[in-house]
Length: 591
Image (cartoon, rainbow, N blue to C red):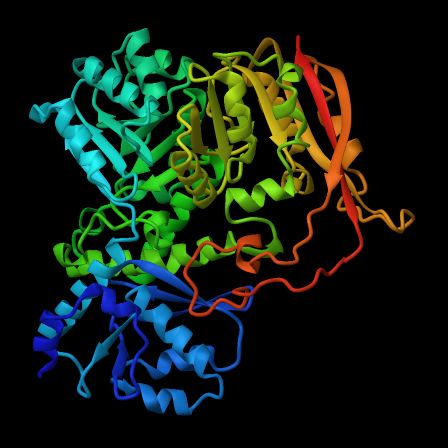
């Protein structure tokens, strides 16, 4: 049977089967090995599926991948080249699972055959990916139709609602929020895109209950030409507002970037959504890779200062990490735009890999909950220390995977809100997914910076920060505390928690200390004219043993792997003696 005939009868679930020795395999022609090396790891970029893959350190691993390029390779020949047959099968399975490699005949697939191979790979991947649903509210769609579409999704989707006037859909948004709070519908994220922010208190409350961000369309670059009606009220009520803008090449001018940053910061804008159209930026199509990189670096400069910047017409980080399906087909863009997108992958994937770390931390809430056990966690067990009550609004600064936000959720109730701000978008997205899977509806996860909270003065009841060593190591602790004090209402409280020391209980004379000066740093940061320290609490817990735990779940790994060195069960602990973590929580009240 010819390859194309076999492909037409192939089932996606056959991709999970072990390959026979007589099979031939080949990398997708859109796969390239990037030149970048991050902490000794190499990266693969799939320009068609727009996804990355990590090649960990290891002799011959990159050579193994390149062996599969250009021409089909016999599986038996591959297996004969390596002693570890199981490792070969694991790498082949990973490449197939994520669409990087296809089964072929002995000859290179034709264009038509390659299209079929890609369709099979896409179909197999789709079952595990989160999808986007785009609904035009102005198109007279009913609430029942929206609800049905949401329920039909295997995974809670990303919902984009478009309308010209927000106020026209006050009832629809209110009812959708009610369905969400009752657990009838679930959305990973909801965005309402509009051209008019006019609203009343009830509509803004519905947006909060819906967990929705608002994307305001039609904003000129680099700043609006006139005041935006309704913006002040939205921001005052803690609705996340993002501006949709289409920059020109002036984005590479530092003065122009300062203009957009100055305006967005003063208006407490949550973020920018930029449309970068390469065909419009370079009408002659004469831009080189360096020109593309210059644009991406300019966007990165804004992101570093503002905290939340998206390029909406390029693949999101969740797409690149293999968690969400792309909403753009590469076949529908110009060749010049394809070059632009490929350059974006080469630029963005190394940045995402740099977010990872081999230090023990956590991947899922179940592991995170072992790091700081619920029964020991000070603030969730004593919300009175923060004066929390049903209806309170709390901002969790450097919120990570959302442990603190989830635990404070019951204290503020369904009418309250916990806004979790985290610098790394990949962590915010994971935290949002964990909360959605567990039916939390009063949590809002926002990418952002501890030193620039996109909230107006005196807009929340409390602010917390827990165990973020990097903030103090980088000298940003004082700026963070200053921002926390700014956004808390008079009479509200802020709390900062950090580990002081880890004790080896069998040898107390040999403690492990991460930062010798952490207490001095925190105390110095709390020297603020509007803050009065009211409590310093010492608390702690026995450190959990890793024995019997799956190593991958304790590592910061977010991108697919060619092979995972941590796909093992811990059989011993580096420190087998009993240890205890001792934490400090400093609580202050805003005058």
